Amino acid sequence: MHLTLSHQTALRALRVWRCARNPPPAQRHELSEPSPAPRARWTSSIVPLGELGLEAPLGPKDVINVIVPSAHSRVRASFFSCRVQPRGLPTDSFVTLGSNVCIPCPELLFLQLAEVMTPEVHALLGYELCGTYSRSAVDPRLDDVAYDVAPVTSIELIGRYLDRCGRRSSVSLARRSLGRAADNAWSPIEAVVALMARLEPHEGGYGLGTVSLNVRHGVSPELVSLGCRESRVPDIEVLGTRVGFNYDSQAHLDLDSIVAATVKGDPSAALRNVREKSLDDLKRNRELAAMGHIVLPVTSSDLFAPGGLDAVMLEAALAMEQFDGRSADFLRAWLSLDAEAARRQRLIWSLLPWPEGKRHARELLESVPWKDRPVSTG
Image 1 (cartoon, rainbow, N blue to C red):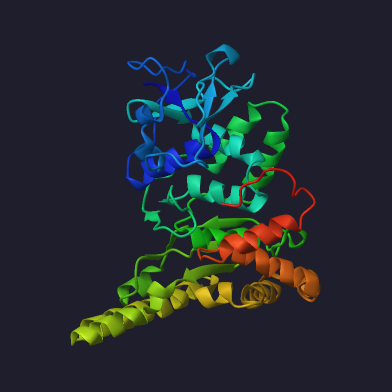
Image 2 (cartoon, one colour):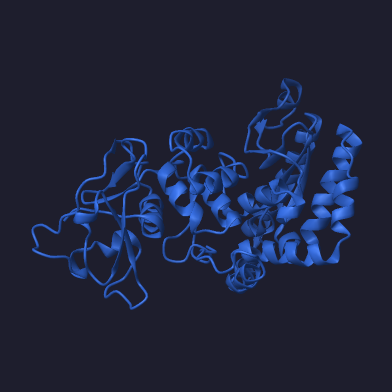
Protein backbone atom coordinates (compact mmCIF):
# COMPACT_ATOMS: atom_id res chain seq x y z
CA MET A 1 0.00 0.00 0.00
CA HIS A 2 1.23 3.47 -0.86
CA LEU A 3 -0.71 6.62 -0.06
CA THR A 4 0.05 10.34 0.25
CA LEU A 5 -1.99 12.15 2.87
CA SER A 6 -2.92 15.81 2.67
CA HIS A 7 -4.18 18.75 4.72
CA GLN A 8 -5.67 17.86 8.15
CA THR A 9 -4.98 14.14 7.81
CA ALA A 10 -1.33 14.82 6.99
CA LEU A 11 -1.10 17.03 10.07
CA ARG A 12 -2.54 14.21 12.19
CA ALA A 13 0.07 11.81 10.81
CA LEU A 14 2.89 14.29 11.46
CA ARG A 15 1.71 14.79 15.03
CA VAL A 16 1.61 11.04 15.63
CA TRP A 17 5.13 10.82 14.20
CA ARG A 18 6.49 13.63 16.36
CA CYS A 19 4.72 12.51 19.54
CA ALA A 20 6.43 9.13 19.09
CA ARG A 21 9.72 11.09 19.13
CA ASN A 22 10.73 10.05 15.65
CA PRO A 23 13.33 12.26 13.94
CA PRO A 24 12.11 14.84 11.43
CA PRO A 25 11.66 13.27 7.99
CA ALA A 26 14.78 14.19 6.04
CA GLN A 27 14.62 12.91 2.48
CA ARG A 28 12.23 14.73 0.16
CA HIS A 29 10.77 13.43 -3.06
CA GLU A 30 8.13 13.94 -5.70
CA LEU A 31 4.49 12.96 -5.28
CA SER A 32 4.05 9.35 -6.36
CA GLU A 33 1.05 7.39 -7.60
CA PRO A 34 -1.19 5.81 -4.93
CA SER A 35 -1.46 2.04 -4.84
CA PRO A 36 -3.46 -0.38 -2.65
CA ALA A 37 -1.11 -3.27 -3.57
CA PRO A 38 -1.04 -6.08 -2.69
CA ARG A 39 -4.80 -5.51 -2.35
CA ALA A 40 -6.82 -5.02 -5.50
CA ARG A 41 -8.80 -2.06 -4.20
CA TRP A 42 -8.89 0.48 -1.41
CA THR A 43 -10.57 -0.56 1.84
CA SER A 44 -10.35 1.03 5.27
CA SER A 45 -8.66 -2.11 6.60
CA ILE A 46 -5.45 -1.44 4.67
CA VAL A 47 -5.11 2.18 5.77
CA PRO A 48 -2.73 2.41 8.78
CA LEU A 49 -5.23 4.23 10.99
CA GLY A 50 -2.96 4.16 14.04
CA GLU A 51 -0.38 6.20 12.16
CA LEU A 52 -3.08 8.81 11.53
CA GLY A 53 -4.35 9.00 15.10
CA LEU A 54 -7.60 7.31 14.04
CA GLU A 55 -9.34 4.24 15.39
CA ALA A 56 -10.94 1.35 13.52
CA PRO A 57 -13.59 1.16 12.38
CA LEU A 58 -13.80 4.60 10.81
CA GLY A 59 -16.77 6.65 11.96
CA PRO A 60 -19.20 8.31 9.58
CA LYS A 61 -17.47 11.68 10.08
CA ASP A 62 -13.93 10.35 9.64
CA VAL A 63 -12.47 11.56 6.36
CA ILE A 64 -8.97 10.79 5.12
CA ASN A 65 -7.56 13.63 3.02
CA VAL A 66 -5.24 12.46 0.25
CA ILE A 67 -3.44 14.08 -2.66
CA VAL A 68 -2.61 12.51 -6.03
CA PRO A 69 -0.47 13.66 -8.97
CA SER A 70 -3.24 13.66 -11.59
CA ALA A 71 -6.98 13.30 -12.06
CA HIS A 72 -6.73 9.79 -13.49
CA SER A 73 -4.94 8.56 -10.33
CA ARG A 74 -7.70 9.59 -7.94
CA VAL A 75 -8.37 7.09 -5.17
CA ARG A 76 -12.02 6.15 -4.84
CA ALA A 77 -13.58 5.15 -1.55
CA SER A 78 -16.25 6.73 0.63
CA PHE A 79 -13.77 7.63 3.37
CA PHE A 80 -11.33 9.49 1.07
CA SER A 81 -11.37 13.19 0.21
CA CYS A 82 -9.08 13.37 -2.80
CA ARG A 83 -7.29 16.41 -4.20
CA VAL A 84 -5.14 16.68 -7.31
CA GLN A 85 -1.72 18.26 -6.85
CA PRO A 86 -1.76 21.91 -7.97
CA ARG A 87 0.57 22.93 -10.75
CA GLY A 88 3.70 24.93 -10.09
CA LEU A 89 4.66 23.60 -6.66
CA PRO A 90 8.37 23.36 -5.90
CA THR A 91 9.97 20.01 -6.71
CA ASP A 92 10.48 17.39 -4.01
CA SER A 93 7.68 18.69 -1.80
CA PHE A 94 6.82 15.40 -0.09
CA VAL A 95 8.30 13.24 2.66
CA THR A 96 7.76 9.69 3.88
CA LEU A 97 6.72 8.71 7.40
CA GLY A 98 7.49 5.08 8.08
CA SER A 99 7.31 2.69 5.15
CA ASN A 100 4.01 3.37 3.41
CA VAL A 101 2.60 6.78 4.32
CA CYS A 102 3.72 10.02 2.71
CA ILE A 103 2.74 13.58 3.55
CA PRO A 104 3.55 17.03 2.19
CA CYS A 105 6.79 18.47 3.51
CA PRO A 106 6.16 20.72 6.54
CA GLU A 107 6.42 23.86 4.42
CA LEU A 108 3.81 22.66 1.92
CA LEU A 109 1.61 21.43 4.76
CA PHE A 110 1.71 24.91 6.29
CA LEU A 111 0.69 26.34 2.92
CA GLN A 112 -2.14 23.83 2.46
CA LEU A 113 -3.67 24.59 5.84
CA ALA A 114 -3.65 28.37 5.31
CA GLU A 115 -7.04 28.15 3.60
CA VAL A 116 -8.71 25.81 6.10
CA MET A 117 -7.55 27.17 9.47
CA THR A 118 -8.43 30.42 11.15
CA PRO A 119 -5.51 32.91 10.98
CA GLU A 120 -4.70 32.60 14.68
CA VAL A 121 -4.77 28.79 14.72
CA HIS A 122 -2.68 28.75 11.55
CA ALA A 123 -0.08 31.02 13.15
CA LEU A 124 0.01 28.70 16.18
CA LEU A 125 0.64 25.82 13.78
CA GLY A 126 3.71 27.76 12.64
CA TYR A 127 4.94 27.94 16.24
CA GLU A 128 4.35 24.19 16.60
CA LEU A 129 6.12 23.13 13.40
CA CYS A 130 9.07 25.44 14.16
CA GLY A 131 9.08 24.62 17.87
CA THR A 132 10.09 21.81 20.20
CA TYR A 133 6.65 20.44 21.05
CA SER A 134 3.85 18.64 19.27
CA ARG A 135 0.16 18.64 20.01
CA SER A 136 -1.77 15.39 20.07
CA ALA A 137 -3.23 14.06 16.83
CA VAL A 138 -6.40 12.82 18.54
CA ASP A 139 -7.33 15.95 20.51
CA PRO A 140 -4.88 18.80 19.88
CA ARG A 141 -6.60 21.02 22.42
CA LEU A 142 -6.97 18.78 25.47
CA ASP A 143 -4.68 15.75 25.14
CA ASP A 144 -1.14 15.58 26.46
CA VAL A 145 1.56 17.49 24.58
CA ALA A 146 4.89 15.96 23.56
CA TYR A 147 7.76 18.22 24.68
CA ASP A 148 11.45 18.30 23.75
CA VAL A 149 10.94 17.07 20.20
CA ALA A 150 12.92 18.37 17.25
CA PRO A 151 11.42 21.12 15.07
CA VAL A 152 10.45 19.93 11.59
CA THR A 153 11.05 23.27 9.85
CA SER A 154 11.78 26.93 10.56
CA ILE A 155 10.34 30.34 9.79
CA GLU A 156 13.13 30.90 7.26
CA LEU A 157 12.54 27.58 5.46
CA ILE A 158 8.80 28.17 5.21
CA GLY A 159 9.43 31.67 3.87
CA ARG A 160 11.83 30.37 1.23
CA TYR A 161 9.33 27.72 0.18
CA LEU A 162 6.55 30.28 -0.18
CA ASP A 163 8.87 32.38 -2.35
CA ARG A 164 9.00 29.48 -4.81
CA CYS A 165 5.24 28.93 -4.96
CA GLY A 166 4.30 31.85 -7.16
CA ARG A 167 1.20 33.99 -6.81
CA ARG A 168 -1.57 32.10 -5.03
CA SER A 169 -4.18 33.26 -2.56
CA SER A 170 -3.02 30.60 -0.13
CA VAL A 171 0.53 31.99 -0.28
CA SER A 172 -0.70 35.42 0.82
CA LEU A 173 -2.61 33.86 3.71
CA ALA A 174 0.38 31.74 4.69
CA ARG A 175 2.73 34.74 4.65
CA ARG A 176 0.40 36.65 6.93
CA SER A 177 0.34 33.80 9.46
CA LEU A 178 4.08 33.25 9.17
CA GLY A 179 4.69 36.88 10.08
CA ARG A 180 2.95 36.25 13.40
CA ALA A 181 4.93 33.09 14.24
CA ALA A 182 8.45 32.54 15.56
CA ASP A 183 11.01 29.76 15.91
CA ASN A 184 11.78 27.74 19.02
CA ALA A 185 8.55 27.78 21.02
CA TRP A 186 8.77 25.27 23.85
CA SER A 187 5.07 24.90 24.69
CA PRO A 188 1.60 25.65 23.27
CA ILE A 189 0.76 28.20 25.99
CA GLU A 190 4.04 30.01 25.44
CA ALA A 191 3.09 30.21 21.76
CA VAL A 192 -0.33 31.67 22.62
CA VAL A 193 1.25 34.41 24.75
CA ALA A 194 3.79 35.19 22.01
CA LEU A 195 1.05 35.29 19.37
CA MET A 196 -1.12 37.66 21.41
CA ALA A 197 1.84 39.98 21.97
CA ARG A 198 2.60 39.90 18.24
CA LEU A 199 -0.92 40.33 16.79
CA GLU A 200 -1.92 43.91 16.07
CA PRO A 201 -4.76 45.36 18.19
CA HIS A 202 -7.19 45.32 15.26
CA GLU A 203 -6.39 41.60 14.89
CA GLY A 204 -7.28 40.90 18.51
CA GLY A 205 -3.79 41.19 19.98
CA TYR A 206 -1.63 43.83 21.62
CA GLY A 207 0.80 44.94 18.90
CA LEU A 208 3.94 44.92 21.03
CA GLY A 209 6.15 43.96 18.08
CA THR A 210 8.21 41.09 16.74
CA VAL A 211 9.15 38.46 19.30
CA SER A 212 11.93 35.93 19.76
CA LEU A 213 11.59 32.83 21.89
CA ASN A 214 13.90 31.01 24.27
CA VAL A 215 17.14 32.79 23.45
CA ARG A 216 19.85 31.89 25.95
CA HIS A 217 21.67 34.77 27.68
CA GLY A 218 24.93 34.34 29.54
CA VAL A 219 25.13 35.54 33.14
CA SER A 220 28.14 37.68 34.04
CA PRO A 221 31.18 35.79 35.41
CA GLU A 222 30.98 37.81 38.63
CA LEU A 223 27.50 36.50 39.35
CA VAL A 224 28.40 32.95 38.30
CA SER A 225 31.31 33.02 40.77
CA LEU A 226 28.79 33.91 43.48
CA GLY A 227 26.64 30.87 42.75
CA CYS A 228 24.32 32.09 40.00
CA ARG A 229 23.58 29.98 36.95
CA GLU A 230 25.78 30.42 33.89
CA SER A 231 22.84 31.36 31.66
CA ARG A 232 19.12 32.11 31.66
CA VAL A 233 16.47 31.70 28.97
CA PRO A 234 13.47 34.06 28.97
CA ASP A 235 10.50 32.50 27.20
CA ILE A 236 9.58 35.53 25.08
CA GLU A 237 11.40 38.75 24.25
CA VAL A 238 10.03 41.71 22.31
CA LEU A 239 12.77 42.59 19.85
CA GLY A 240 14.16 46.10 20.09
CA THR A 241 13.09 46.43 23.72
CA ARG A 242 14.25 45.26 27.11
CA VAL A 243 10.89 43.65 27.89
CA GLY A 244 9.83 40.03 27.70
CA PHE A 245 7.64 37.39 29.31
CA ASN A 246 7.96 34.06 31.08
CA TYR A 247 4.98 31.76 31.23
CA ASP A 248 5.02 30.36 34.75
CA SER A 249 2.68 27.38 34.56
CA GLN A 250 1.17 25.60 37.54
CA ALA A 251 4.32 23.46 37.61
CA HIS A 252 6.16 26.56 38.87
CA LEU A 253 4.05 26.48 42.07
CA ASP A 254 2.91 22.88 42.21
CA LEU A 255 0.74 22.95 45.31
CA ASP A 256 -1.12 19.83 44.15
CA SER A 257 2.05 17.80 44.60
CA ILE A 258 2.23 18.93 48.23
CA VAL A 259 -1.38 17.92 48.83
CA ALA A 260 -0.83 14.51 47.21
CA ALA A 261 2.33 13.93 49.24
CA THR A 262 0.55 14.97 52.45
CA VAL A 263 -2.16 12.38 51.83
CA LYS A 264 0.56 9.75 51.52
CA GLY A 265 2.06 10.92 54.81
CA ASP A 266 5.31 12.76 54.04
CA PRO A 267 5.17 16.08 52.16
CA SER A 268 8.76 17.13 52.96
CA ALA A 269 10.24 16.23 49.56
CA ALA A 270 7.35 17.89 47.70
CA LEU A 271 7.67 21.01 49.86
CA ARG A 272 11.39 21.16 49.13
CA ASN A 273 10.86 20.81 45.38
CA VAL A 274 8.19 23.53 45.28
CA ARG A 275 10.33 25.85 47.40
CA GLU A 276 13.40 25.30 45.21
CA LYS A 277 11.44 25.93 42.03
CA SER A 278 9.88 29.10 43.41
CA LEU A 279 13.26 30.42 44.56
CA ASP A 280 14.82 29.62 41.19
CA ASP A 281 12.11 31.62 39.44
CA LEU A 282 12.88 34.62 41.64
CA LYS A 283 16.60 34.27 40.96
CA ARG A 284 15.90 33.93 37.23
CA ASN A 285 14.08 37.26 37.16
CA ARG A 286 16.84 38.94 39.19
CA GLU A 287 19.62 37.61 36.97
CA LEU A 288 17.79 38.62 33.79
CA ALA A 289 17.19 42.08 35.26
CA ALA A 290 20.92 42.34 35.96
CA MET A 291 21.45 41.74 32.21
CA GLY A 292 18.98 44.50 31.35
CA HIS A 293 15.97 42.27 30.63
CA ILE A 294 12.65 43.15 32.26
CA VAL A 295 10.84 39.81 32.12
CA LEU A 296 7.24 39.79 33.31
CA PRO A 297 5.78 36.51 34.59
CA VAL A 298 2.51 35.35 33.00
CA THR A 299 0.39 32.82 34.87
CA SER A 300 -2.55 30.62 33.98
CA SER A 301 -4.88 32.94 35.89
CA ASP A 302 -3.72 35.86 33.72
CA LEU A 303 -4.93 33.97 30.66
CA PHE A 304 -8.25 32.73 31.99
CA ALA A 305 -9.35 35.72 34.08
CA PRO A 306 -11.25 38.38 32.07
CA GLY A 307 -8.82 41.21 31.38
CA GLY A 308 -5.92 39.34 32.96
CA LEU A 309 -3.68 39.34 29.91
CA ASP A 310 -4.75 42.91 29.11
CA ALA A 311 -3.17 43.97 32.40
CA VAL A 312 0.05 42.04 31.76
CA MET A 313 0.45 43.45 28.25
CA LEU A 314 -0.26 47.01 29.39
CA GLU A 315 2.35 46.55 32.11
CA ALA A 316 4.78 45.46 29.39
CA ALA A 317 3.90 48.49 27.26
CA LEU A 318 4.38 50.80 30.25
CA ALA A 319 7.75 49.18 30.97
CA MET A 320 8.75 49.82 27.34
CA GLU A 321 7.64 53.42 27.78
CA GLN A 322 9.87 53.78 30.84
CA PHE A 323 12.94 51.85 29.67
CA ASP A 324 12.81 52.03 25.86
CA GLY A 325 11.06 55.34 25.18
CA ARG A 326 8.14 53.70 23.33
CA SER A 327 4.80 55.36 23.96
CA ALA A 328 2.04 53.17 25.39
CA ASP A 329 -0.73 55.61 24.42
CA PHE A 330 -2.02 53.58 21.48
CA LEU A 331 -2.42 50.41 23.53
CA ARG A 332 -3.95 52.39 26.39
CA ALA A 333 -6.59 53.76 24.03
CA TRP A 334 -7.29 50.39 22.43
CA LEU A 335 -7.69 48.62 25.78
CA SER A 336 -10.34 51.17 26.77
CA LEU A 337 -12.72 49.91 24.04
CA ASP A 338 -15.14 47.53 25.75
CA ALA A 339 -16.30 45.77 22.58
CA GLU A 340 -12.72 45.04 21.55
CA ALA A 341 -11.90 43.81 25.05
CA ALA A 342 -14.72 41.27 24.90
CA ARG A 343 -13.66 40.00 21.47
CA ARG A 344 -10.00 39.84 22.51
CA GLN A 345 -10.81 37.83 25.62
CA ARG A 346 -12.93 35.43 23.58
CA LEU A 347 -9.98 34.98 21.21
CA ILE A 348 -7.67 34.17 24.13
CA TRP A 349 -10.15 31.68 25.57
CA SER A 350 -10.60 30.09 22.13
CA LEU A 351 -6.90 29.27 21.93
CA LEU A 352 -6.44 27.80 25.42
CA PRO A 353 -6.44 24.09 26.36
CA TRP A 354 -9.79 23.75 28.11
CA PRO A 355 -13.15 22.24 27.10
CA GLU A 356 -14.84 25.64 26.74
CA GLY A 357 -12.26 26.69 24.16
CA LYS A 358 -14.18 25.05 21.32
CA ARG A 359 -17.33 26.99 22.15
CA HIS A 360 -15.47 30.29 22.22
CA ALA A 361 -13.77 29.44 18.92
CA ARG A 362 -17.13 28.70 17.34
CA GLU A 363 -18.68 31.93 18.64
CA LEU A 364 -15.69 33.92 17.43
CA LEU A 365 -15.92 32.33 14.00
CA GLU A 366 -19.60 33.20 13.74
CA SER A 367 -18.80 36.87 14.36
CA VAL A 368 -16.37 37.39 11.47
CA PRO A 369 -17.22 38.34 7.87
CA TRP A 370 -15.84 35.17 6.29
CA LYS A 371 -17.77 32.85 8.60
CA ASP A 372 -19.31 30.91 5.70
CA ARG A 373 -15.89 29.76 4.52
CA PRO A 374 -14.93 26.26 5.76
CA VAL A 375 -12.29 26.82 8.40
CA SER A 376 -10.81 24.78 11.22
CA THR A 377 -10.48 26.28 14.69
CA GLY A 378 -8.00 23.74 15.99
